[in-house]
Amino acid sequence: MERSAYLAGHIYYGDYFGFLTAYTMTEQRVILVNESDEAIGEMEKLEAHRKGVLHRAFSVFIFNSRGELLLQRRALNKYHSAGLWTNTCCSHPAPGEDEKEAAQRRLREEMGFTATLEKLFSFTYRADFSNGLTEHELDHVFIGAYEGPVQPDPSEVMEYTYHSLPDIAAMLGSDTNAFTVWFRIAFPLVQVQISKLPADKDPDHTKTSSVHHQIMRGK
Image 1: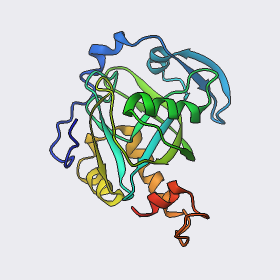
Image 2: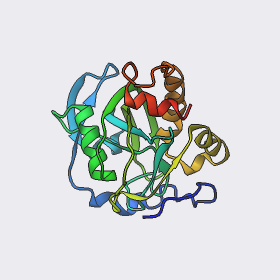
Image 3: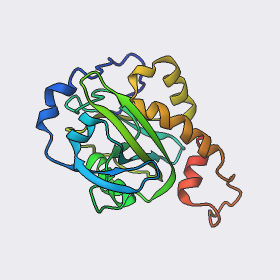
Image 4: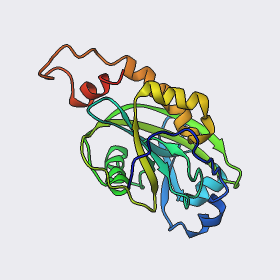
C-alpha cells in the first residue's frame, strides 16, 4: 500500500458510510467506567455507542526514527469516522484486558507490527455523529517508537503516512474535518506532553528511553 504524500485535498466522507455497515459489527464488549476510570460494568460495543455511555478506550501514537508520527486513514466500512485521518491506531480493551496489552494487540492487528508502548496521559471526550452514534470515551494515550514495514489490515485502514508534528498541526489548521474528532482533541495534548519530555543529552540513550529519543527528534 502506497503512503500518501500529503493530506490536503483528500475527500471528507464524514459519517455517510457508517450507518451502512454498523449492523455488520461482530459482537464485542467494552468496559463501562466512571469519570475516575473505575470499571462499573460492560456493554456490547455498538449499544454503548448508541447510548453514549462512558467506556474505556486507548489511542496509540507511533513515531519513526525521524520523530515523525504514523497516521492512518480509516477504511470506508468503519462504523463511524470512515475515510478520516487519525493517529496510528485506536480501539477498546475487552473486559478483563489491560489497556496497554490491548493497545499492543490492536497495533499488531490493525497495522501489522508491534512496538514497546509507554503511557503518556488519558483524557475524556464526547462526540455525537450524524449516524446516531456517540463516542463517549475515557481514552488512554500511548506512545511508541518503530522503524520498519507497516502492513495495515485493509478492512481497517485505507492508507497511511508519516508526518512531522509541525506539519500535522498545519494540516489540522487548514483542513480539520479531514481528521477524526478524537485526534483533533488528543494531538494538541500529545504535543504539550512531548514538549515536557527531557532533552536528550545522552548519546548512548541510557538515561532516555528509545521512545523518548525518537520523539524528541520531531519536536
